[in-house]
Length: 404
Image (cartoon, rainbow, N blue to C red; front, side):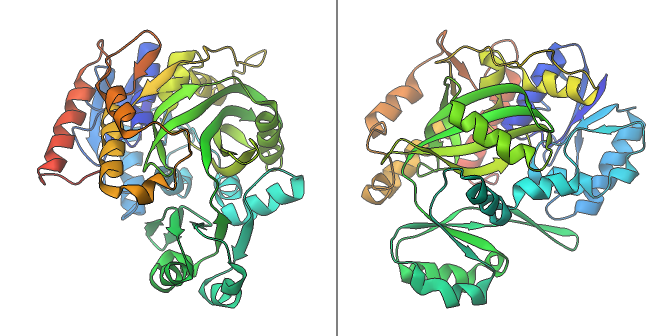
């Protein structure tokens, strides 16, 4: 099949490219940079430079439609949320013969809207942080006196907000006191929209990856985040496969079945150090950053997802994988180390007590490949993506290219 993978600069796109290329499919890659890590893979047939979907969603989707027509593309994997949003709005431009391998807009909104997601989780009795629901800026100033315990986490309802042709990107924010919290709501445009203020859960990040079919899991994999970027919580830079947690599996099933979810999703939790409970953080209805860990440990989600969209479903639950396998993102780990060195005690206070020390992180960074660890980007059979990432990283340090 001819397959187009978007957002080639991401590690998840690289994992998809390698997985499907190794299965014998012809893989095309597009991205905001011509020499992105996926485009440099030996499994990429041809690469395309596209507009940023955040800034020009219409131009982006038009360019995708042109590529699909010119290269006889059978299926498109939109990898990031912004690509999913842009292409979902232009499904009719892709033609009836092209499969867009993502959930439709109404399903994406159902899992992406944290405001309604946590309300649903509360009704279903799913463990979650203490939460204050804020309808907008004015509502915050009416409710702010309710916030007494700090630090708190501020989460916009959507990580991506569509305004006309633009897509506004947002992220998690933190406040250590009332003054910082008020400043956030005074200055951040994204907080004009609904948001959540939640207690800060200190503990290990853990995720459940699933291929879901309306009301049931078809494939499952779980991992824990050993180190993240930023260190207080973000993308994993060192992760490890762990046994499935029955409570997480059932919580994910309830939430996804509630919207009849079709396809892949990652349900994120944090295991609260106070009681060991896995508490819901969010759901991502797309491929995740540590996708390569699942593939390397034994659950090939890109291949399973491709089959799913071709109406080929596994006869039994796919969840047989190696527990204890690790995935290390070298340059992400370096960033983690740099952030901790710069932040000092303030960052240390936000980390779980058992977090590795700076010295231990440095040792992990310098440790080479082993049988139980896969490097996220470096692959001796496909070395060019790592070389491209190294060039981009050094360029960013020297101010020659933007830092990711």
